Length: 159
Image 1: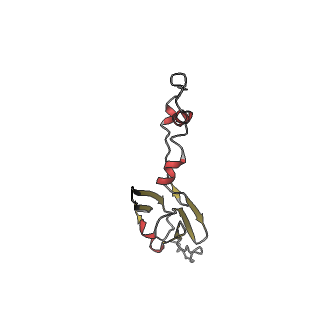
Image 2: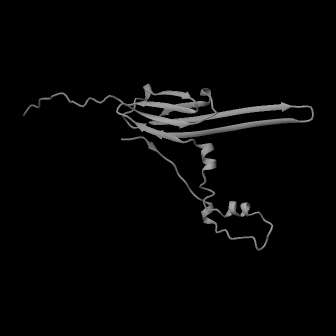
Image 3: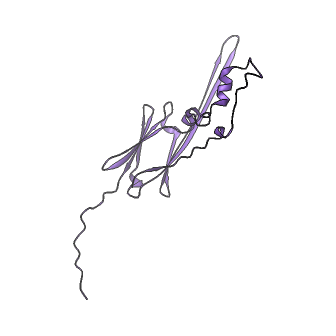
């Protein structure tokens, strides 16, 4: 049994039939009309990429490996938890920067977070899960339990 990833995608914008408004407002920029007319707006990747990073899942004989693409974060930003047969990955990152010059002040701040969850197969040993963060990739190793393929002999008594 493999690792199960759940996601749902609902397009609200595809329920709305947009039509060209240039005849009413000829000066209205085309890119704004395209922005609202495009049926794929709700399905576009830009909000989802910020809220839910890409994850590669690999399976070897001994383990599953999850590679989570999360550049710009620090190791302390992540929380990993195994609970009731699920692996929960979440992160919060906050930063603030302020520049003061003679005639202006510029203050910028950034906040990003995400949460992902994965059903774990029964053969994953939760106590031995390891994680490492390096160069924008969170690598999570999920070791498989060693299954004894040869069953011992058992004599059955005839009654």
